[in-house]
Length: 226
Image 1 (cartoon, rainbow, N blue to C red):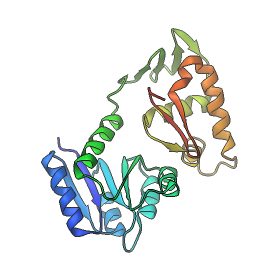
Image 2: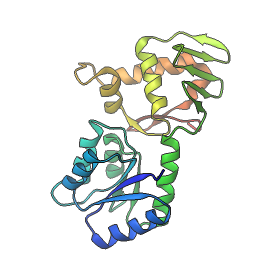
Image 3: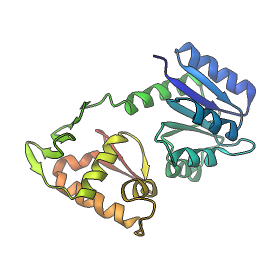
Image 4: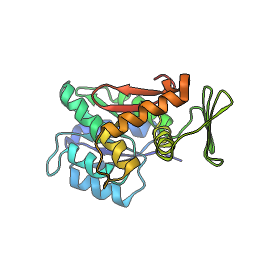
C-alpha cells in the first residue's frame, strides 16, 4: 500500500518539483498551496505524513502544525527559510518531528520522510504488545515493566508517561505536549511535573533509563541511541 503524504507549499514550481520526487518513490501525494486547504485535505483523507512550509498565505505553517497537533500525532516535517535556533525550537515545541532548511535537495527530503515513517511505524525493537529495548521489556497486555528480568513498580502516571514516550519513539516531544497528553489539558500543574516524573522514571529503570533522552530547551525523546 502506498504511503500518503500531504505536501503544503505555496510555491507552485517547488511543490510540483517535490511531488515528482515523492511519486517516483511510490508515494501518493496530496498538494495544498495554503494552510486552510491543507487542514481541509487532512480532515477528509487518511494521511501518513505531512511536509509543511512555514511561510504561506491565509494560515502559516506554525498555525497549521498547532491545529493538527490538537488531534493527531501524524509525523510532520517542517520547511523553514533560514537556519535559526528559534525557528527550530518553535517547530519542535509545536510537535514537529523534523525540519529541512531551504534550499534543500528533494531526494534528501524523500529519504528523511521514508526514515521518519519507518520509525513511526514501529519497526525497531517492538512486536505486538511486547516492547523490548535492550534489557527493558514493556508488556502492555500484562501491564508489567521489567529490567533485566526484574519487575519494576511504577506509579500510574510513570507508566502512562513511559508508554507515551515509547508510542512516539524517536520523536522530540516538548514538555507542554507531554503535560497535555499525559496529565490532560485541564491539569493545573506546571512543566516541572514532567521533569520530576522523567527523573523518577529514569531512576527506576536504572541503566535502561538512558533511552529517555533530553533535548535541551525543548523536552524529551525515547530512542535506543539516546
